[in-house]
Amino acid sequence: MKTINASGIYYRDLNEIIKELVRSGEDIINLKNVNGQRYIGDNLSGTTKINIEGTPGNDMAAFMDGLTIEVFGNGQDAIGNTMNDGNIIIHGHAGDTVGYGMRGGSIYIKDSVGYRVGIHMKEYKDKVPVIVIGGSAGDFFGEYMAGGCMIVLNLKNDENIVGEYCGTGMHGGVIYLRGDVEDYKLGKEVIKEKIDDKDYAFIQKYVENFCQFFDYDFQKIMNHSFVKLHPIGKRPYGNMYA
Amino acid sequence: MLKEGYVRIPSGCAISGIIDRTGRLFSGQSIADSIATMHDRSNGLGGGFAAYGIYPDFKDYFAFHMFYDDLIAKQETENILKANYIVALEEKIPTRKTAHIKNAPLIYRYFAIPRPEKLKLSELDENEFTIKFVFNINSNIPGAYVFSSGKNMGVFKAVGYPEDVANFYKLESYKGYMWLAHGRFPTNTPGWWGGAHPFNLLNISVVHNGELSSYDTNRKYLEEFGYICTLQTDTEVAAYIFDLLLRRHGLPIELACKVVASPLWKQVERMSPKEKILYTNLKIIYGRALLNGPFSMIIAYEDGFVAINDRIKLRPLTAAKKGDMIYVASEESAVRQVCKNPESVWIPRGGEPVIAELIRDNEKEMYSTKEVTA
Image (cartoon, rainbow over all chains, first blue to last red):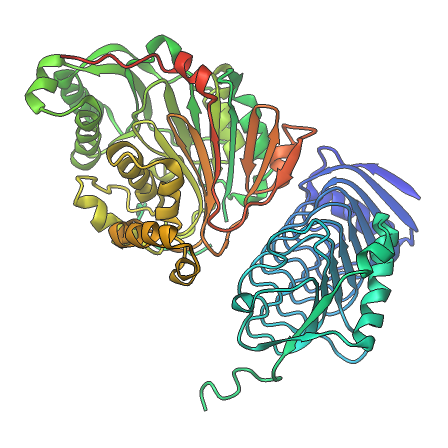
């Protein structure tokens, strides 16, 4: 275990230190007083666990392949951009474009997220990225989503569980909402349905993790209706130019 | 070097704003520390600050901040200035030599009030009179540029990183109740001193991250009201639009925000009958004042500031509150740098303004009742 006081350290220098520690097989890195340093955990692979106290900067865990990052605070924009594998746990809210183009691993966020979360996520065989959000989400949620799964729990009963243009251009993957959503918010490529037992079992697995990370009562969360959003077809624009 | 409008460089920016709603004055060091946290959002081609409440000894005078390329521009400007204004104090704006700020123009400030006889002859109020003066200098005197023209406030800007600009202007020595900051990463135009943010007219100052694709529509609309866009840079129009909406047309700030970030027709359709009428009319009357394109922006006006995003939120914005202090910035880290334990931190939705105004009682003290002349 290694502890670093990140206060005042420029992002490049900080990331250089982290990279060396991860390469040398350090099991746990504790980063204290992080504030705005970008690109933490980017393009790193391994099994290291990074604990962050403070507010990490943009593009945290971009292209990350493995590792677990736990943030004891809020996240900024573009967390897990094109991330390939690993786990991210945020004890707070996060900004826009979380999980942009994400292709594997999981992200758990205690509170709400900004706009364009999970846009163009994708999956391949056993690589299925998952994002679980305790609060609500902004507009363009799951836009052009091609694979993977997002679960929105809306635990604070926000009037808008998701914003407008949800699932616009969606052609793969699935979104589960704890509650319901107005039809006008949905992209025309999306169908809203009731969940079945298989869906329920899937949600259950991830909500269990969520409850464990953030100390919520599992029964209370699950004792609620869910809806499922999935695409009508795999190629929504297949005939656009034909 | 080619100036704004003659060259295009496609590329982000940083913005930050702090207000003490009680009107208590605090040093410029906080805003400098806040914006410096986002160093990598700028590229050194522009940084600037707007400071409110810094000139209490001259609070009834227009504070003109000027850039001059040479002494001829200075002389010509002063001839016009002194023919139209009584100047109570003129001086070089204090700067310190720093390694990072180069090629500085001549930088002066004047505290002035319009000559009563000139004002009477013009049949204008002192604000309109002053706007005409500003546009006259900026369009007709080569190498002279009024970059700040409000009362008890001032803009400080330069080519450089914002933290260097703060150091250059000794901002730590000023005390204001409201501060805006900008770090520039020029997108369409090269960086030059006049093109740095904030953009100011009278008491309105704007800092902006984004790009206004509606610039030309806005510019033509504003010309009909006598605003002359001399900088060929997009943010300039936002400052004039807010002057038009707030000061001239007397719109409440909430509605002014719904003009520049107007609800989409689809959303208007879903509104209650009363709201539908309001927003339909607003869209029709002020269609050409709509700001289109990606933006996060902070607009400071006499009573406080508003921070707002474009309707589909293509730029970042975070807000925070601690007691009577309100903070807004492109990134949360910029707030936490200067406010360790905010009570609340939130990310506003697209088109939803964060309005932070002085608390009414104190406002009376800040802005003593305006005299009504017979």
